Amino acid sequence: MSPLAIVPDEILSAFQNRFHSDRQPDIYRAPGRVNLIGEHTDYNLGFVFPIALDMACHIAIAPADHGKLRMYAHDLGEDFEIAVADISTAKPTSTWSDYTIGVAQQLSSRGFTLASSDLYIASDVPAGSGLSSSAALEVASAFSLLGSGKLEPLEIAKLGQRAEIEFVGVPCGIMDQYASVFGREGAAIQLDCRSLKHEYVPLPGTASIIAVNSMVKHELGTSAYRERVNECQQAVNAIKAADKAVESLRDVSLTFFEQIQDSIPAVPRRRARHVISENQRVLDFAAAAKAADLPEMGRLFVASHRSMQYDYEISCEEIDFLVDTAIKLPGVYGSRMTGGGFGGCTVNLVSPDAVDAFHKSLGHAYEKRFGKRAAFYDCKAAPGAGRLSNSFPKGA
Ligand code: ADP
Ligand code: MG
Image 1: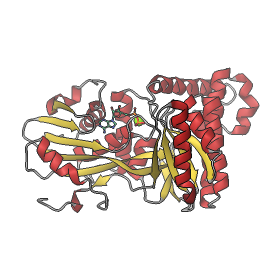
Image 2 (image 1 turned 120 degrees about the vertical axis):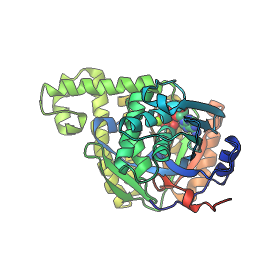
Image 3 (image 1 turned 45 degrees about the vertical axis):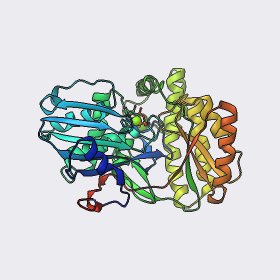
Image 4 (image 1 turned 90 degrees about the vertical axis):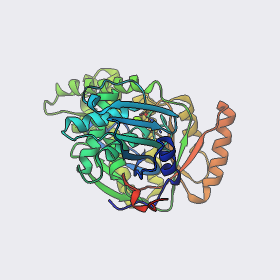
């Protein structure tokens, strides 16, 4: 992987101050992501369409002789340490360290020897906002604990996902870790979550992608996420009665679903309708992006949002307000919630010359209605995870 341009100047000295050391750490970067369309389709083995962000998690790491992994989370001001010998039997602590220790345990179970090390972790991906700060942390952890080039990129993505499922306890799909690993400047990643093959789709330069953070944290998210995963499985079980070959919602066409939908109980039926129609929207969106058809891309954004709002039932009042207000503003092609749901961010396609007014009007309306400030992020598709240290002047 080529050295990346973005260098967090402070992390080297922050590492040295924190660990009272003049060692030169290696520095790794793993980005967050914004999913443009294809929500809750990844664990149903369907299609997703994320971009990696220039907001990223950075980890500075250097070997140490204390026999431990000693970590400091800059953004939280918290330490965590564990003896390397205890990693393979470690239990989750329900703290941020689970993401890194979960990854360390995965590496250890694949036979990699972990070195006693100090890790300084700093991220500018907002946590719990649907931009996947968790995958950024997992992928940065995997790269830093492993070093570059020891595992295929796809294996790193899978390992991060396994850590989140098995150690953190969230039954997530592969999208977030995949996007963090495979991001590309200027392009979205059209990923087939069954074959785990992707195609890069260049994005039209004639629209800005603006994420708007409602500042509502998705605390409800984990239990509801698990519930949705189960409801999709219930839908699959019901559909199997009509066609034994169906193994996931990915196998079901919209036409077939419409023919047999009465045989599915009401709630799983709505969940299935979202997933099946969303898979088609991803394919339609990719075609519209290739044709630089912004009105069609915007229409699909809004259709996706309505499907999440009414069929998947994962939106909330603040997010619906952001979407409904945004789509009435000049120069806005479309708006939808992005990420797991119950808060977090919307993603908006906005004509570049309308971005300032969009920011002002939407920010003002949101503050007036909910008494809190939304944050706005101009999202540019950025490269995937890699090592940064090459661009560091030695001895700086
Ligand atoms: P999302 O992935 O949408 O940001 P998650 O709930 O999946 O939300 O992950 C958020 C969690 O990831 C945080 O609660 C924290 O445990 C961990 N995390 C994210 N960023 C950091 C960070 N900079 N430092 C330490 N832990 C972090
Ligand atoms: Mg996450």
